[in-house]
Length: 174
Image (cartoon, rainbow, N blue to C red; front, top):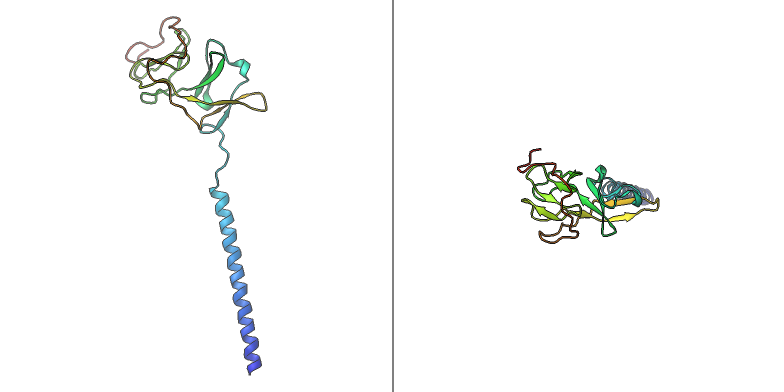
């Protein structure tokens, strides 16, 4: 009987170890799957890198809208700048007025020059900016995941007065 009992114990140990190995494999597969689901992926679209236009398409005196990045591109002192289209007062979308050459918030009347500098209104600062980089494909990419606060009132990057009549009247009504 001792020989049968010894063989029985070996079989139990074998089955126990087999179950332990199977459990370890299931745990490893679960950890792998969890990592795949939770790992950060490269972000594209708003909140990450947004492909825009070739640098030569950015005008010297106007702006170009990049709606996927919720921003505008312009040249300031020879450098391409990406400005957020979001007003720093309450977050309204701030359109660019071609006739005045300025950004005019239709909600509460804040005004910003072409560089995004604060000119007038209730906004606490100028328009926020995003960094840009030149991609291998020769196009500009706007990193909407890294926002920089706009400048404080009184700090001007460019001194460009309005070039014509405003698009919005005081009080935010066109």
